[in-house]
Length: 471
Ligand code: FAD
Ligand code: NAD
Image 1 (cartoon, helix red, strand yellow):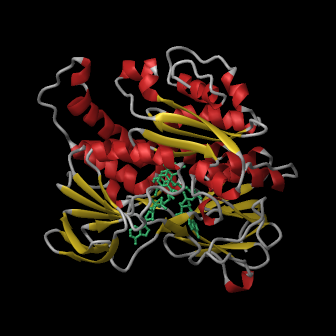
Image 2 (spheres, rainbow, N blue to C red):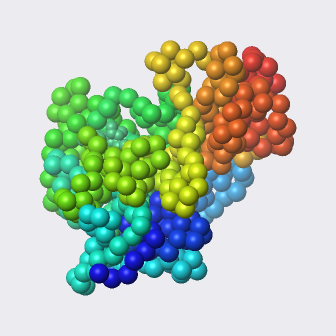
Image 3 (tube, rainbow, N blue to C red):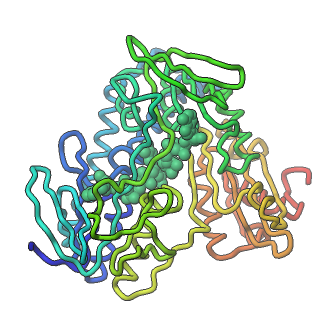
């Protein structure tokens, strides 16, 4: 038996490392076990920092800059000639961003006196954790409390096994040249973000989506508005498309079926992004008796407690949206519970963002979910075409929609499609966290000219008194 800890966290992603830092702040002697290897080196930060949120946003930002210069500056009276694209340099910058941030997490663990145990962690019975180091040696540790935060992995499909041309989301962050034609299986969050990156850089992108509906979890009016924009940008999204098989040679032939029968496309690269699954492989021994739910996630209650006393699970490996900030907040909650405090997590106010252009962001309920639940509601909308700031920016596509309870006026959901929606949604999250009514939001002064005035106008529009539109 090696050392004892108050808390051992398995997984050093945004759920695990945040839980560890909060636990250490609260005086717990803490260790993080993490097995991630990034370009040959152990690296903290999990999927999010190494191959997820951060590198995808780095490339979204770079590709947005390129697209702006090549397509959008002329409207401002700026002519840019001989613009060159250096994809290798772009990927190098992305790697630098990743390395700086993951290195920062290592520093934070050190500063908080948290041990980083590099290797694979496995929950044994009686609150023990076996760590298999990258070179193979094994150690067993004992902890008062254990937090499982192993995250998730991409789902693979038999019709498109990964190879040198068929890649998952991590592979789509590493192309060293712009594929002339890019196929994407799944028009979900990753498909839209990675499809946008390569489309902006010049790829002809075709997305094959199994469902007939676009982004079913998003408010459908907002989804429709976004779909129109994406089509205008040249993203070719084909619905009701079921991929039957693929063949890789000099390029990839993708066979699929839709309502018109058998179809096929040829692409240079194919990205498979059809969802993610909980990373429970070799996470616990049989005699640990950890309970999974019917979908294979670690079974937890509202406080992220598993069926085993003193064992918690957080982040992508448990129910709820697979989002970094959701996992981090669960980590804070669990660390506070372990230290004898009252952990708190409000699943009703987890914001979502899809970092396309325009961005899509929302919090709370959609109109379609309220309708099917029979909840009475009223809505207010405001189009960015009427926003002075959006016009000044020459970026008018999009809208804000506020949904409030028909009787109490309490805000039930806010949905935004437009530039900087990722930042605008924060106001709605605060409002909902404080149980604000649409009237509260309508009475708050918003600076002029800002995009946030569109949120204000949409809130005013709930009671049909928006100023800059006919109600
Ligand atoms: P992870 O980040 O997956 O971390 C788990 C860590 O545990 C990993 O390092 C893993 O190797 C390690 N591990 C697993 N099992 C073991 C074990 N047995 N022993 C030791 N270590 C183990 N979310 C957002 O909120 N915003 C975004 O913009 C966003 N963009 C994304 C873009 C892409 C391309 C992808 C793929 C995901 C994106 N996500 C985004 C989702 C986000 O990455 C996840 O929700 C988040 O990383 C989950 O955090 P986690 O800590 O639960 O797991
Ligand atoms: P997703 O669930 O968002 O989208 C997957 C899409 O693939 C769905 O539309 C689904 O209908 C479709 N699909 C499933 N099987 C298919 C098949 N066989 N053929 C064609 N289409 C198929 O999943 P994702 O895009 O892989 O992303 C995984 C998760 O990662 C997201 O749900 C999200 O939680 C997280 N993520 C978040 C962000 C963000 O916050 N901006 C960015 C990327 C990823």
